[in-house]
Length: 419
Image: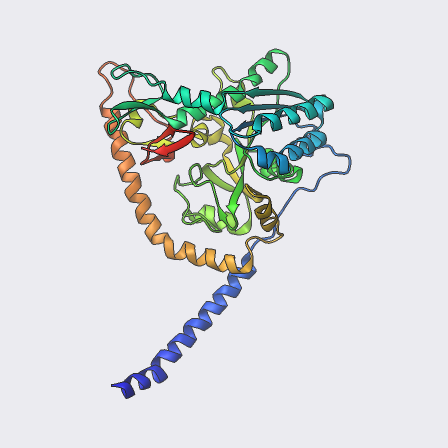
């Protein structure tokens, strides 16, 4: 028996393994060589933005904050100030809303406000509840039988819980509120720029603005917490409305989206956020204006949820006309060290390019089947919701079906959790 095995290994197994190794090596070389170069907009010497034909793009910068002091002190505040200096203080307004922080976020925002005031850049900095006041707000539940918008019944605890997504949508709309007031004062902006608590620089923002020469409903960066795995899986959906195949480049299930990612071209997607997103401001000036929202409470009752950062694209009338685009050349991070890892001319590095290629290949079938099963669950519950509409009411409709997932998220203690 041992002799037969040795003969099999010598005559068949070793040649097979050598052939497989040869093909794998060839494939690895092709994958590594196929990695795209990074295309970034170089800043002009006169410090004027090339993001619009006039060279003076006006930008409404928006952010919400909770326990973001560390990144603000390390880089975020200075990056915002550098961007304001480049665009020109007269061309920007910063609107920041903070609530529930346990450390020095409020103080860091006040420092930023003082620096903006010194530059003559208009701003609105709103400091909200303390962590204890926020806990009190979450704990002030409607009594049983007296449901209020944004609350969902927790059967296990026999009480209402505050839904996370409507809460976040409310805070985001609060941060957008100064846009209306500034419009009444005669100021109108070309772009609405949402910034998460990420590490970025001015070149990132100008490159993002120049996605498709500015022809988009929205354009997003790619965000990373631990390179090279991207972070924001909640909001990112490809052009087919599908979740990504894996966390590694080239990410997508859709062949069209994956091909664009492999070339570092703007990738058309159904939805994205990914740390930084620039919107064409026009929909925020319509009547009624585009706003953030959660799905209806009655739909959430069926254990479904959708990110407000995804639903905003489903509600945006420009999405169909101009599209939502992910720009893989703009890479930002929630960690300063990781940011320098992703700021390479060719991304990812050779090792992770090969890992990513095989991760996408090996997971494509599994993820495809899983996506179909999840979509069937969501679709069945969505149809149930439509059929359960009260007689005489307007037929129920949810345009953000691609955003829906089989989850429920509630505010909890000083954070949130799944229900």
